[in-house]
Length: 240
Ligand SMILES: CCCCCCCCCCCCC[C@@H](O)CC(=O)SCCNC(=O)CCNC(=O)[C@H](O)C(C)(C)COP(=O)(O)OP(=O)(O)OC[C@H]1O[C@@H](n2cnc3c(N)ncnc32)[C@H](O)[C@@H]1OP(=O)(O)O
Image 1 (cartoon, rainbow, N blue to C red):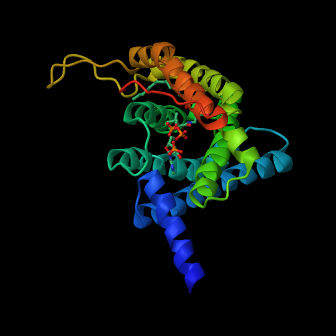
Image 2 (cartoon, rainbow, N blue to C red):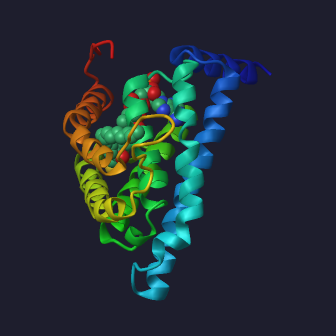
């Protein structure tokens, strides 16, 4: 009896340390386990596909449903941030999540002709490695049983994976450009009843250019997190 009271006090102290209650903590454990499982399922599906077919052609088509579900669920990360159950920047999370959603729904899913590009497989593999590590890190951390190698992997692998993932994404958008230009998809030409014009082709060029100022912000954010978590440095974050 005394020991279970002690256990719950330890748990309460841990929750207080993180500044979240038991309900929020339970939800986050469930969410992170679900996301780890989702990305593991994707990893296994990709490996099985490649082993059976010996080619990446058709791989995206075979995993698209799972990818769409789990990447779209990541929108909940903005909600977590908004309601204050995770202590992270809304801006950084917003850029990260929206760029992924955009890649899945408005590029790879919308433009079938590019689904067999090597660059699609590149970013898929990189995202999968990242997310398995990231969500398992959060899960073990919330359970207060965090193996050091997962912590190390979470705050080290991104050094290589992040830029490689960005290369995969940019090459994919680049491959989409001719199809977008030819089809005029998602574009609005004048004259029309709203009297506005929108050219998706030029929008994609702007998106590609926006990686130049935005990606370093994410990368340096992660480097600061790394110094804080792996080296215990006290970092005073600017209010972003
Ligand atoms: C509309 C068109 C838009 C187009 C925009 C174009 C702009 C393009 C520029 C952007 C390029 C992005 C490209 C990207 O997609 C490429 C890749 O991802 S490649 C793969 C490599 N990527 C990575 O390694 C980064 C992965 N992403 C992240 O890590 C996060 O998304 C990020 C928001 C970047 C950083 O995370 P965060 O600030 O949350 O850092 P921490 O993980 O250290 O967490 C901070 C604290 O919050 C707690 N936390 C966060 N999430 C959870 C959770 N789910 N459950 C529990 N706890 C959570 C965490 O524990 C920390 O708490 P504490 O400090 O108390 O320990």
